[in-house]
Structures are given as C-alpha cells and as structure tokens.
Length: 283
Ligand code: NDP
Image 1: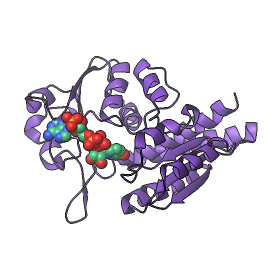
Image 2 (image 1 turned 90 degrees about the vertical axis):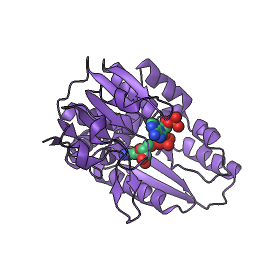
Image 3 (image 1 turned 45 degrees about the vertical axis):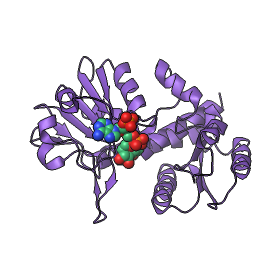
Image 4 (image 1 turned 60 degrees about the horizontal axis):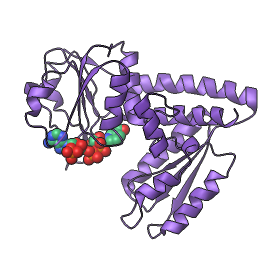
C-alpha cells in the first residue's frame, strides 16, 4: 500500500513556519509583506483561487489587496493598474490571476510585472533564473512538489524522474527543479510516442496534463513515487487528478491524492515568495 502524501498537513506545517518568519521579519524591520492579486472578469474558479490566496495571506500575517476589474477591462487599463501597484511600497508581490479574458495580451501583462515583484515567477527574467538554478522566486506548483518530496524524505538525486506535461507554468519548471536536485529527467508531452514505456521507467513520476484519470496502473513501475498535479472537474462536480488513483495506488510506494495533495502547496509557495520579495525589497 502506498504512503499517502498529505499535502494539507505539509502545507499547514510550512505555513506555520512562514508565519513565524513573517512575525520575526515584521518585528525586525517594521515592514509587513504585501501581496496584490489582480483579477479581471468573474470566472467562478478564478474567484475561488483569489479568495484562497487572500485567506492564505491573512493566515500568515501579510497585508493583501484584491484588485477586481471588470471583464471588459482594456489592455491599457490593466497596464495602468500594474503600474500603480509597481510603485506601491506596501506591495511586495503582484499576481495577475490567469486565464485573462481573450482580448487581453497575457504575455505583455506578465512582462509588465517587475521581476522583483513577480511572485508567480512567470516573468522572463525569473523563468531564465529558474533555468540557471539561481532563482529569486520559486515556480509555485513545482516548488510545492519539491517541498512535498523533501517533507517525505524522498531523495531525488540519481533517480529516474519522468514529468508528463511541458507547460511553462508546471511541466518545464518542474523538470528544471528535479534536474537541479540531480534527478535524471525525461519530459513527456502529447507527441511522446510510447508514453507508457517512458512512464514505467520512473522512480518519481510527476503528471501535469489536465486529463482526468489518464495515467493508469499499467503505466507505473512497482514502488514508484507518483505526484499528481492535475485538477480536473468531473461532470458530477468532483475534483479528480490526472492519475487513476484506484489502479495506481496499489503499485506506488507513495502518492499524492487529489484533492489534498499538490493543490494546497501552490498557494503556500506563493506566500513563501511574497516573504522573499519583502525581504529583498529592503536590502
Ligand atoms: P497545459 O494544458 O498548459 O499543458 C498540458 C501539457 O500536457 C502539455 O504539455 C501537453 O502536451 C501535455 N499533454 C496533454 N495531453 C497529453 C497526453 N495525452 N500525453 C502526454 N502529454 C499530454 O496544462 P497545465 O500544465 O497548466 O496544467 C496541467 C494540469 O495541472 C491541469 O489539470 C491543471 O488544472 C493542473 N494544475 C494544478 C495546479 C495545482 O496547484 N495543483 C497548478 C497548475 C495546474 P503538448 O505540449 O504536446 O500539448
């Protein structure tokens, strides 16, 4: 039977640690770390994520603001808002909730966030630093996965690591973090020829494709550590991962559930980045 990696419990422990370090930082400097979250439009899922980010900030003692903008916000209005936040000394981290409405240029928006306030680590400067292994901010979801492995004492060095998915926000930075931790990393995607042949080689398998229950037991090696980043909404409204938990769990040595695995770690790492941004702002 696999060890269930409890993301909620680990996330709570990491947030307690962040809360303690935040209190110390405020006592030493008089500066309260501040996060601004910009949301354009009224996508219900995005609203839930934004609310959770605000609650996360409150839980560790940060200052936070949510800037709600209507769905018909123009590019220049959004840029003006970012310009205002850029110059606001109380704000150390700026995050624009994605996806943006189709008429807005997402790339230009992400590039308009100054790298030193880019707590999502999506700016080209920060993605470049991730590549070099010399980063100011950790890419939140992949960093959350690394934190789970660290808490569970799962060694990455020398292991066969397979990442399924190559998006800029999960798959690619995930591969980089595993590589920096000395894993032997293979990245798979929709053009990978024999996916199961590759995934069966993995000692550590990280799946981020956005397809419900896609990875089945026959695609996993006995004793593998399986990390399911996927978050898919079933027709009955329930959340499910990219891994077919029922067939994979008996083969794995450790596995993350969905919900309650990787999900809670993403906001936790965002909080970590915001504290880092505040610290760097006074250097
Ligand atoms: P994207 O849609 O941006 O990328 C999906 C990736 O999966 C692509 O690289 C794609 O390949 C690959 N892929 C799709 N189908 C297959 C297939 N049949 N075989 C192999 N590879 C395939 O997704 P994201 O990376 O943004 O998100 C992935 C999942 O993670 C989603 O469920 C999302 O909701 C979840 N997520 C969870 C987070 C969390 O906090 N837990 C945070 C962010 C995302 P190709 O490049 O060739 O098209």
